[in-house]
Amino acid sequence: MQAELSSSSVAALTSDPSLLRRVRKFLPMCQLAASRGSAILAQFAAQLVVGTMVGASGLGVLQLFTSWTCIAGEILGLGLPTRAMRLVSVAYADQQGDVIRQLLRDARRKIIRLWFLLALLAGVPLALLLQAETPPDWTHYSSLLIGAALAAPFFSLLRLYAESLKATGGALAAVTLESLTSPVALLLVCGVCWLTGQIVLTITLLIAFGLSLVVTPLALHAKLRQQLALLPPEGALQGKAKTLLPAVRGELLSLWGNGVLSIAFLQLPFIVLPIYVDAAQIGVFAVAHKLINVVTTLLLLLAAVFGPAFARQAAQCDAAGMLSLLRRTQLISTAVFLPVSLTLIALANPLAQLFGEDFGDLQIYLVILTAGQLINAATGLAGVMLNMAGAASKELSTLVIAMIFALGGSMWIGPEFGAIGLACVFSGSIALKNIVSYALARHHLLTTRVPS
Image 1 (tube, helix red, strand yellow):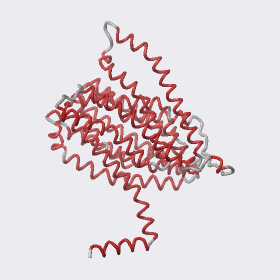
Image 2 (cartoon, helix red, strand yellow):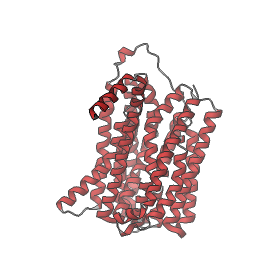
Image 3 (cartoon, one colour):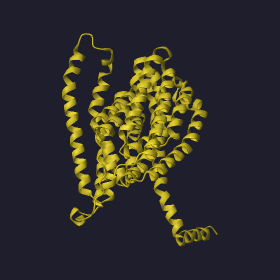
Image 4 (tube, helix red, strand yellow):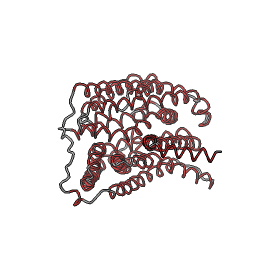
């Protein structure tokens, strides 16, 4: 009977082409969701294992290194990864593989040159400060700063190749590699240490994370080359019309500012917290931050799918189409975030017990951060839409406003209310940023014609 049901179901599916098309349409999204879900579980498992084996202080140091590397890497990126998604998505649709290869070569060269220049400019002053009799207080993090500087260009290249791979239709591979490599590397190191009876040192975890940043862009580049190999050779496309995106004055500078401020805004707690609290409190906040940032990982997943779609709609001057896509991102992200966040809050105490006695304040952090991230989910991919529609300067203004609010609030609240007060400031700044970004996105689509 079961075999009959299976065969009849297959027959019904194949006899109804429209049903088959609908199933195929949602299959890539389901695969992406499964990949991102696996990444979230791996990241949580990595934090749980690291927190258990090295404590809240070790987890806090690892989080600082991760955050500083991401910020430095985005500075080196010069806005090129975001622009690559916009340009590659259109060029790939036109089957212009050579254009994409040249774009990536130019971007890679600019990133490496800037890294060398900044390393030369910063190396001498840093060496003098470290050798001074009374070095500044922040220099006790000098090893972390140097490590972040060395790892930064690899993060920049990771972002460049990941965004380009997403634009060529390889979103599943891009999301899987950029999300899973680092937590898997940390879990492997912890597992080897546990099996061999060795103590897990914080420096070992930092090296493992750094090596994962070397491996990931290499894997992404290899996959990107496979995607481009599917395109016909340049000679076969002579006479084919190219879709030209509008040249927006100062766009790359705006994209650069958006990229740097976005990552700095996301990682701002781990820039400000070391000023006011110890590494153990940073570790507890890091766990809550990672857990509640399920919505952030969701929006990254949606951006991998909807970012290129926004760019193609912008190239066609279809403001109504972009508005429809924006609404879809709002519905999807809100529908996923609400049940997940409420479940996390309900399970906060058991989760805190898993990590250890240092994590007793986990629930209050989760509640505070949920409030701001709920607004983030409800407004969808407004910022991505502005970047892809040639309105990056408007998204930049929202980030500047939110950053001023967050920094001002931190200086006022941090000294007296510590980590809990800072969590409120960060959550409020997230809500403010996304409300302003959504309002500007709606205004842009409803009153301004996308440049053609």
